Length: 176
Length: 462
Image 1: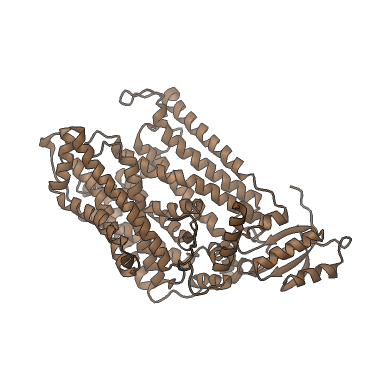
Image 2: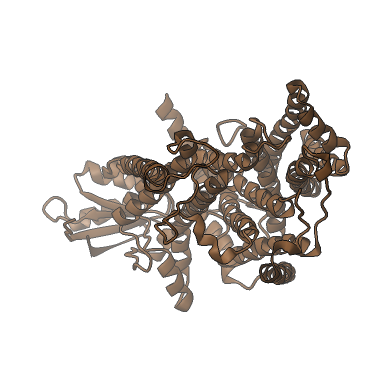
């Protein structure tokens, strides 16, 4: 993934309503919205920020298929090909008896792959340092990160707009 | 249960007029401050029980499982009873965290974190029993299918005992991952409030969480996907456990009813244990505003519902035994009710079917003390259910010449007490060191935020 850095203006809001209103106003003025940082998922912000729906379900499906095929192959190969053993006169390839293990492996692979891809895609890993805007974001503050481009809107106008929508404070920084 | 979380006229989910920062403060201070006066005595009691269990387990591994009361007729008894009991306890945690998430039951948010923790600890307790039962636990890795120098002799994939290995293993792994994933935002909150070593630890554990809207968007989908996987998983786990019995020819075990019967029983016993734990936790950790009467009332309704299904399953078993015309089946159930273990059958029916019916009465549902006693009774009754199923079916089988009885030894009883010690020790440590209430989720159901979301959702539907 190519990383680009932007000059950004960050506004901190006290409520999710203020955040949504400010985000809508910025968008109307043609200001590019980079991200929002919130203590809990704010519904409705995805559309304003233009976040596309994640494709994680496809990963889950792929993981499930992988686990299913792997488990069925392992059970068939070990029971019927590599070391066929007569257990109570049952057929070597006893497919119905292989279903429970196949199902469990489906769930295991699908779940683990989903979480692994989620962590990778969100750049989360044990010990990774947080690029947190403000420590209160994980408490009760809502931050909006907008791209600062002097050509489209004057910095003072942008700051004024954040303030009128209830920003408690704002500052400039360089972000990815 | 209705689909919407807050009906008009119902009590609020969270009481005490909490704001988001108040929630953060209340939950984090449980970890940041010294524990309350009740924590240490409770912990020492649990830890003593755990030590007793450690001694018992060390002794029976050194001497062998001849230290148990088993004989040639009764080859499974106390140990497998405890295994099935603990696996069952875990099921309510997954039900609360996964099924109630899919059904959008908002009351789950205050209790889901501790219920999931309960699942994980219960599965740990459960896993110990078959491990000891192997007799040579140091060879436990033989249950895994890996290329080995013994042939390679593969595991028998047709055996329900091996299905158990995969079912319990998957269940534990997925529950653990789901629990941890749900905790990452809250670990971030703890990190941002801490300093020094505590900050470094939570910084490591929170994986660099920064509350970005892009991450939240993916996070919610990831949680839904895991919930959708965990829902059939939880049904499969106790179904697989039930096949340990149902695929055998023993009268009293050989029944197609077993998978749903076991799953419902598991949910029933699990909810009873959640109630027991939550009623203790809200007192010890002072969480009356978060785990309210409404939460307890909702869980009581689940309890009376699943308890009635369990009662229907008992009746179905009896009917099928009679209707089958098989004299062995009929004898097994006659012996179960009127034989030497008839008292255990009485405890089972009294605690599981009759006692929970009191919960139809609103006054009893709203009395925390009465609910606590009933939840303990259900725990007891569900332990006896497994004991009755296992021991009464085995001790008088087809050949009267091989009939025996079964009495547990002190070693077995000490192991059971030890497993309770392990469970409560782990749970109390969890209460002390990790956020036991999902802060980021509770913040979404605080009155204002959730009201707005309800109207948003209604608009979307309309």
